[in-house]
Amino acid sequence: MIVHSTRGASSASLSEAIAQGLAPDGGLYMPPQLPPRAIDWGPDLRTRATNLLAPYFADDALSAHVPAIVAEAFNFDAPLRWLDERTALLELFHGPTAAFKDFGARFLAATLARLVPAGATTTVLVATSGDTGAAVASAFHGRPGFRVVILYPEGRVSPRQAHQLGAFGDNVQACRVAGTFDDCQAMVKTALGNRDLVQRHRLTSANSISLGRLLPQMAYYAHAALACAKAERALPSFIVPTGNLGNAFACLLARERGLPIGRVMLATNANRALVALAATGRYEPSKTIATLANAMDVGAPSNAERLLARFPNVQRVIDADWADDEAIREAIRRAHAEHGLAICPHTACGMEVLRRRRERGDTDTWVVAATAHAAKFDTVVEPIIGAPVPVPEPLARLLASPSHSMPMSADAAALMRLLG
Image (cartoon, rainbow, N blue to C red; front, side, top):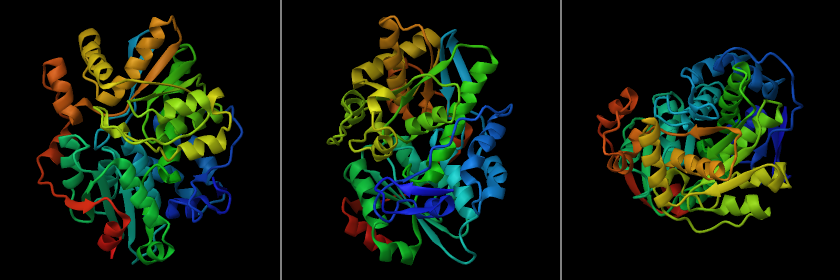
């Protein structure tokens, strides 16, 4: 399969695109539209993921490896938790770093491990607003042939997220940048646009600009939609808390493949560039605003470029709404009071958006993507619910490890000096 850049000047095989990350023309690689398929997708997440992803790798160097890559990456589940007959949470936080990013990061690592020549070292760059960096660090930690450099905005991630990012060591370097996530993302893009640097360090990206991160995220939406169909529930629509838009775009791609998915709705925090895009069709990046849902503090979401390239009439394919910090707090309190659940601030955005729809009389079946475990945001969640949040064992092990990150100014030159 040949994939093309959103800017039209670059094309590559899927393996080449995954290895490169960003296209040479500065655009994002886009998979071609595959026709919907009426097939037996399989009974479980791994089988469904393999059947969904295999056509993208047809005739590719990785074609025969797809089942093994899926088995390596998807070794935990994405269960549905039904809150009532018409409302469910899609729990995406059962991986090693307690966030949905584990699915895509582990798939990318398993893919690149099969592409890197013996004896070569690939440098993986990642900008993170909180969860991506830890997932990537976990996925690549200790893998021969890889160096990982993580950039995160200092003071704009939760304390436990920051500890995670610096707790791996070895082949993983965490850098706390004196700026915003958008600064970190711009630094990564600048480095990936430097051909000499790319060739010298075999640079690639682990952000959702990478198809190796994006494509596998379709699988859990397919899994959830097929589970609803098997249980003879009504056609599910999805509310996806989103910052950089990769997770929600994956849901749109799954629907495009013919999975039984109704509407797709974005839930954002006070960073409302995507809300405006869904309403007007115009993409206008904005200055980043710090919120309680810090992993979605993105003013210039990269995947907006993919969204507009794939769906020029964007208002017809998505809806969007947002929640401010007070609404986030109230949604966390309500979920605990009504359902006995501790939810993270990002999931709270989705729950608040759904609450408003219900108040307006919406009786459809909705699934809210629960993107991270509440224990990663203890300083936000625990004072609101008045109780401690149990820490999953993998997260507890990381929090018990020493953590170190190096300071970095928010400019591409600083990153290039680090890379050498």
